[in-house]
Image (cartoon, rainbow, N blue to C red; front, side):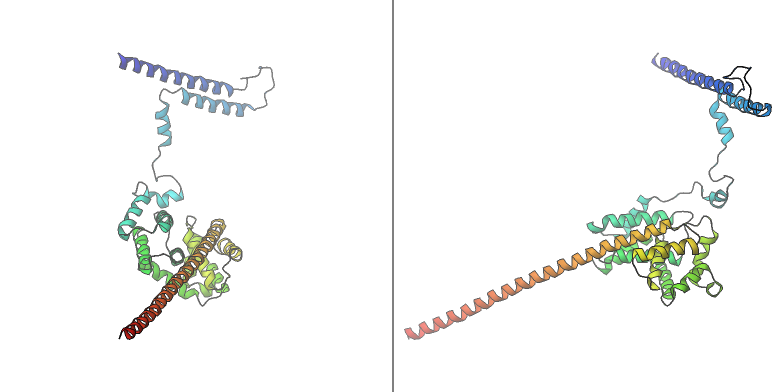
Length: 346
């Protein structure tokens, strides 16, 4: 009995909703006529063709709402299939529709397994952000790895892990685990970054800009080849490490590493040389310098703490030495007194 009552109630509710929709559709159809809300004697501003067109569209809309199975008609009209849209983007990346993409959680689980150690608590949030950000960049279908991106990644890791407490071995283990968990080989990434850095270290700013533009004399340079996809590919994807790679190149060619000096150069290179928006790259540049300033401040503070601790240790050692010297002097005096007393007894 309860089931029958529930079914009846649900049916009535559905019929009420459909009735309301049909009533609204009828009102819409009525509103589309030329005399819906005005007397027939009033002048009609629309032409007969426009009125007929509006009435036709309104009637079509009303008929769609009055249909007994609205959902079925909507599905028939849509006929949507993932990756099958009639667009350039779908034609290029449509074959990836439904492909399994690793989650950030899976990437971090692999990072933890590869590392095999507990990350220092002071660096835990930063390392988590690094793993998640790098993973989300590399799993994007539009991502294209190049040596400039690798240079930016290596520069970022060197900056953030420079003062890691457990030493060089632990720092290298973190880098190894990070790159492995995101599907990259640490030797390949470092080799690509080193090759571009070696090429750029003897160049001038004018040479770099000529390579970015793609002038004939620099057409075969590694940076010129890197600059081609941003200019020719509408779906080329900018990521943070690409911008930091440009910062490193600026540093190599003598641009002052100050955010106010770097901003106009980044704007010119991204907008005028590569033909892409400079806003995100300049924001990443400002973030890089903010983080760098904080890390430099932390490094200075740690050095000051280390100096104070060494001074305190030196003071403690000096106090112990003085106490030991006084004890030795007292021992000598006591020995003399003993010898003097023995002579008197003799």
